[in-house]
Amino acid sequence: MSLSDDEIKDLTAFANRLADAARAQTLPRFRAGGAVFNKAGPWYDPVTDADREAERVIADMIAKMYPAHGVIGEEFGERPGESAFRWIVDPVDGTRAFVCGSATWATLIALEYEQTPVIGVIDQPYTDERWIAVDGDVRFVRAGQSRACAVSGEEDLAKARISTTDPRIDGYMDEAAVAAFARLAAASRVARFSLDAYAYALLALGELDVVAETSLQLHDYAAVRPVVEAAGGVVTNWRGEPLGTDDNGEILAAASPALHSAALEVLAR
Image 1 (cartoon, rainbow, N blue to C red):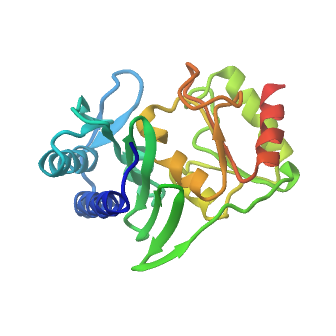
Image 2 (cartoon, rainbow, N blue to C red):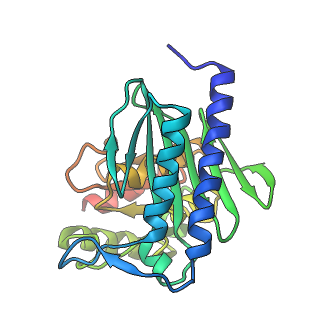
């Protein structure tokens, strides 16, 4: 069974309303000196009221509008559904950036139908930027103006602009991954760090060429994958396999098949 144009239109409008509602929770709390809680004991994993309240509002809206739909959120876990639809939400991807006042965090909202991505939203409220991928098409919206966006198409790794959130061993990577990313960075033109999901948005806009990360969970990549792929990019793990098929939470997103292959080769060394 496939979705009708009217169903996709309604679901897209609803996804935008979810992002707007999340903005109403996150923006007033950004750079406002709110409390930060550590939810991981000895390992620092911050969470704020912005994370929790944005996810709470999103989940409540879904429950009222589509009570049969399932929901997975970073903060409150999974609410199984009774239909083929499942929403996957990360209310503030990049909480470390959020608590440091850096506008590189994002709200991520994804919708799957029969385990296939249908909608992916990357929303950066402070800069008023939104990327929304729907059924293989992606639009970039800023200040009410919408336009198509596409990856750069760069094929030469030596000219590539690459990114990862944290390339340190005590960050999100183990020793082998740190060494592999260091090789990739050395082979590229420039590397930038600490962008979280915003890096994938910039990749879809043609401003970055490669993003390589580990330790990601479903809520971290469910929304970014359809955005990058709809913009013409390639997304796999570090072995060229589908996301979620390894134990390390790997993702490699690139602006062209040739660039993706070159990055895979360097990571594999």
